[in-house]
Length: 95
Image 1 (spheres, rainbow, N blue to C red):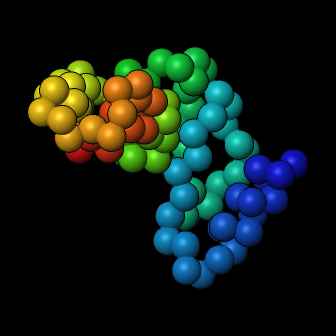
Image 2: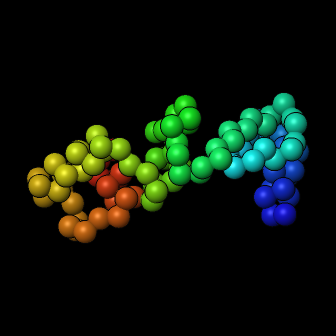
């Protein structure tokens, strides 16, 4: 119930204007601040309207071919501090 408690506190916090819940099922809560994105397959992001947001929120999970290309160029130019990169490193170099 950690998620339910966090959601309840966020909904009650006046400084939080909106909440986007992403899950495999609806959370069953209705509130003006709350929007839900139900993805039965959490690894299929075709329905996500703003994929670049996912890269910023989860840099260790996502990248794009454009970001990868820019990162590769920066590596060749000698602007990388190492040659074995994690997704977050690629996103940082390709930004």
